[in-house]
Every structure is written in C-alpha cells, then in structure tokens.
Amino acid sequence: MAGSPTARRRRLSIELKKLREADGKTCAQVGEALDWSGSKVNRMETTLGRVQPSDIDALCRFYGTGEEMRDFLMSLARQAKTKGWWQAHGSGVPPWFSIYVGMEQDISTFRQYQCEFLPGLVQTAAYATEIHLATSYLSTEDRERAVHVRMERQAMLTRSCAPDIWFIVHECTLRNVVGDRALMREQLERVLDVSDLPNVTLQVLPFDAGAYPATGPFTMLGFPDPEDPDMVYRDGITDATYLESPDDVREYTRSFDMLRAAAASPQRSTQLIKSTLKEYAR
Image (cartoon, rainbow, N blue to C red; front, side, top):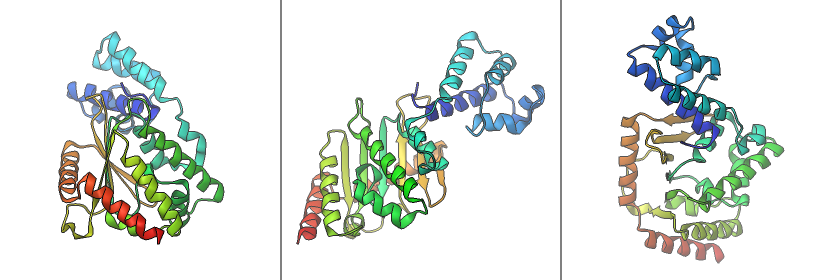
C-alpha cells in the first residue's frame, strides 16, 4: 500500500469506486440509498471530498463488504488525514502542486520530458530561484519556501529504494541561459552528477532530432502496487492536469518511448552536456 497521505487518499477513492462499480450502482443511486447527494459519492471517489469513518461504515454496510475490507478502508482514511512534510511550507506549495508532491513520494518509476527548463529534480537552488523569479507571483518568503521544497524533493533521487528515473530534456534547456553563464556552469555540472546515479537515465533530444510526438513537458508516475494505476501530470502557471485513464497513460507512454528513440543515447547526451558546459566556461 502506498505511503504518503496523498497516495492513501487516492487509493481510498479508487477502492470506493471499485466497490460501487462491482455493485452495479451509479453515484446517484448510492447517494439516494444513503440519503446523500450523488455529488458527495462522486467527490469521495475523486479525492475531492473528505471521507469520514461514518461514511465508510455506511458504504460498507450498503455494499455488504467484510470486516477485512472495512478495516482496510478505515486505515486508509485515517492515514489520509495526516500531513506530508511539504504541507508545512504553506502557500509556498499551491494546492494543485501539493497533490503532485504527495504522489511523488511513493513512486517506483518516474518518466519526464522537459523542453523549456531543466527538470526540477536536477535543479540547483540558484537555478530554481531564477525560474521562480521569472515565472511566479510568489512573495519573497513563499518563493524561498518553494525553492526549499524543490530541493527537499531531490532526496528521492538517492533515498532507500529510490525510483527508476528517466529524464528526456530538449537541447534548448541546456542552452537557455537562466541567470548567467556561471550559474549555468554550476547547473550543468549538477545535471552530470545526477545522470551518474545508478537509478537515473538522462537523454538529450538534440535540435536536429526532427519531428517528435510532444507538445510540451509532461511527467509520468508509476507506483509499486498494481492497484495504484500510473498517472500523467502536466502543469501550467496556475493549475495542473492529472490524467489517469488507461487510454491517456497508454498514449503518453507511446509518446515517451518515441522521444527516447529520437533522443541521443545516454552516452552521447553526456557528451552534449559536457560540450555545452565548455562553452559556458569560455
């Protein structure tokens, strides 16, 4: 079972939806039977609503589940109420991104394509600060919190049972000067250090790669428990999109595989990074 509060909340919603569908009922039918609104049932199944112990009791009686399933759901609900470490940073982590950070804590695989800036998991604090200065409206205090959270997230790269990580970055991310040339030298050295980790693969998609199947950055998160389906994450300036349907995940998986095929090999990518690093040293 996944460990972070966010992942437990998601698992709880998945299990509740499975129980309803196995019973052949709609949200409206369940709501009517329990004297609830259908929207309340839907919110509980989409992580948008808080699930109380009394709700689980009522649903388990209605669906006729056994004690073992009831206890499992109760455990998920209790653990979903705890707070993750990132939530202590308040408005430095907007709600739509807090969900992502919570999911990230429990992944077993991580696939990301970046075509504008280098991935957050490989950024230095100085690079991340420049990005936030240019792209967000956060206060100085919240910006510092946001950068701190980004640095803390990088612990997943070397944690016990670290996930299998695969980055694909467009060559423009290496040449887009964020800050100044000295900052970029430090940043590319950091990229090389991360790419040397045994659980990390990094490829560069060169300018001459031709056409490729992507219209912007995206991240794919995979989980160790088969009951927790993979998901795709895409963020914007003020919100994010989470895609979980098998069709969506399948298409993004196909696109990522095609990007891997079009990108330079990991060895050639390292040489491209080192070559760019030398240019910044001039």
